[in-house]
Image (cartoon, rainbow, N blue to C red; front, top):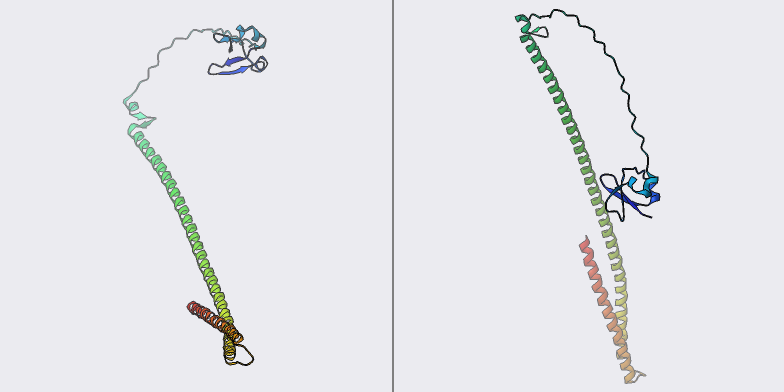
Length: 250
């Protein structure tokens, strides 16, 4: 079964099958083409498409009524001759020509003045609206700027509060650490003094001990003295550093 292209005088469409052409309302003069044709043909020339053609009714012939005109003789009359006087020549619409021109000019002037006045009023209203809108925009802008400034002030206040809080917390932490170090330092000093006393006693006590036992005890006590001495130095250095940092925060 062939597939046909249709042409509406401007562009072609398709291809369409016979079943699809049933809904295209093609006419006898509709140009069609399918594979195998040398040129476009009217649909009425294709036997396969004749059953699909839509018949167009002939145009209605309008009957023209016949009218009979009866001509009656026109009675002859003498021609009317209008006498134009010089006064009629100088008048327009019953008015003197100069008066008519003056009235016309005055009327044009009044109409022009009215139009100009309306135009100026319109321009003035537009200018007032623009100025009013500009003023509203300026007020809105000032309000926004004021709000921004207030937000900046609030942020600065909050930052200051946070900074003061952090500073206070840091001071409290440093003070607590210094107090703890002072307690540790006192303990370290006490242990250092005890270690020195034990070292002195170990060096001076000679009874019931061999030389090796005495040397071993002295070495052990010397380690304790060195340890607590180093501990005192470390705690002292850390406390001095903390005190310096605390002084800088004031």
